[in-house]
Amino acid sequence: MSRICELTGKGRQVGNNVSHANNKTKRTFLPNLQNVTLLSDALETGVKLRVSTHGLRSVEHNGGLDNWLVKTSDDKLSLRCRRLKRDIVKKRAATEAAAA
Image 1 (cartoon, rainbow, N blue to C red):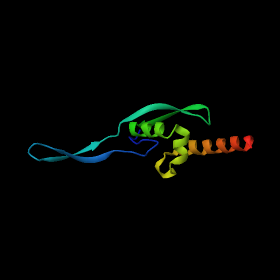
Image 2 (spheres, one colour):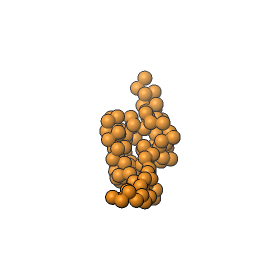
Image 3 (cartoon, rainbow, N blue to C red):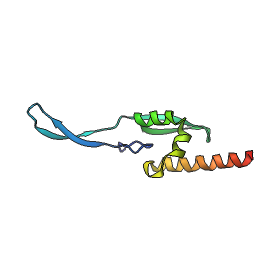
Image 4 (cartoon, helix red, strand yellow):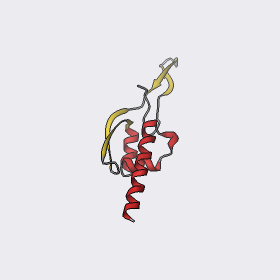
């Protein structure tokens, strides 16, 4: 399983460990990924995702998973999230058409 956030696309970064003697050795910085179940209001189900803590804060700030997915461009999202976004947009359109 790759260490990439499914919502934000945040992945590992490469840097250096620097010793007191200023010796540099390569190292990686991994994102803080959590396995979470986020609720979709439009689909009325829970969705299990592997998300960074930064991504979780962004989802909460935007008012939930549905709003986050609609606002985010497809190039940042994983394949699962793109499919989920498509389903949410379809469901919202059907709901609005039924209400009108």
